[in-house]
Image 1 (tube, rainbow, N blue to C red):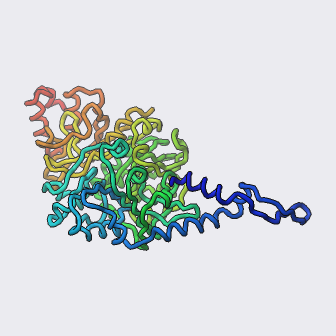
Image 2 (image 1 turned 180 degrees about the vertical axis):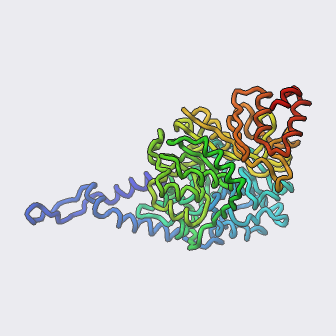
Image 3 (image 1 turned 90 degrees about the vertical axis):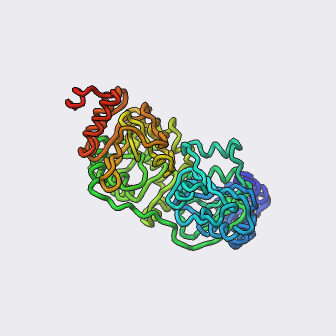
Length: 488
């Protein structure tokens, strides 16, 4: 039963024939039949709570009981990030001996991913749509799979039946008086997938915040309820280095007042946010936000006043951070949570004027190709929302698409600006999509530039220790003439 059907049934069953003593002007009363509007105003919250409480009690069970519904050969979706339903995940892993060929699919989760351990081969196999450090080794060793895909297109795989879905495991808030739970910190793809799975199992955590937007799932859609009362998993903030801050300052210099921001997680993302204190009327439209937005929103720097889409709202699909962030989004109408298929849709993104997309990279070659998901042949993370937002920002009026990265890796021993990408490395953002590339050494603008102009611009923002060898390669590759190389 859908929420609308459930609500209609409730009204049909309860709107007829209720006699009341209705007060009239002057203190007299009139016996009559209450109309539907008056009933809803006076009694509906209490009566609804009674109805959904009964349904809730009927579906409540232990995690072990709830996970008995997972059969061999099933495909199971796990909610990601801080919404990872670890109580349910642990109960699923505990059934390993009884199960064969269960596919577990998700984006970046937090906590352990024991189902990827070698001893569970044949029982579970993970399909990663964006890899975290808890599954990366298994993918690289061949015990798990990686699917390169734009985040904006994930939900479509399930909607079309390309990936039929059996079970959703999710973490939610307790239900309200109307029988709706909230996905809280993490709408991601889970809201959509809960509509297509045969079985939906919810960890109902008393500590999950209630959030605004498209975050609600009705109890009628949930197959089993498992109660918990535990702190949510938190993403530990990366320590900010001077390199992060130098990159952050260079990125901040490209952000105008009134811009709408997309940013991610990690040292550079947090550093950029730290450098925005002197900006005015910034907005948010992004797949995720970290802790750094809290101080900017409380200071009024981020207020959404000049947004051209969802004015005054920070539009997100999920949040990744600490309890500070969870407390801030709880019942906060400044946030508008939406599924990733909406937040990351390039055509939606482009409707935000002055859209600034800030994304990272592992390597950028001298022609501007961006590798962000692998180190050579070894998958590292995923496509994420990089292309979704780079292309959306490129089509935005006054948009600023940015790739930001430190100039070196491995303690300064390896340049991230490279002659060519490492063999086997995947190209996430094509050289035709790249506009700004930013390191701690400056800003290179590549859009509409020739290979010669690109090579010169990228060499200029590489670490000086590697510039000579980059110039030498550019000459050998005929991107530069020897004279041009010397002048650059």
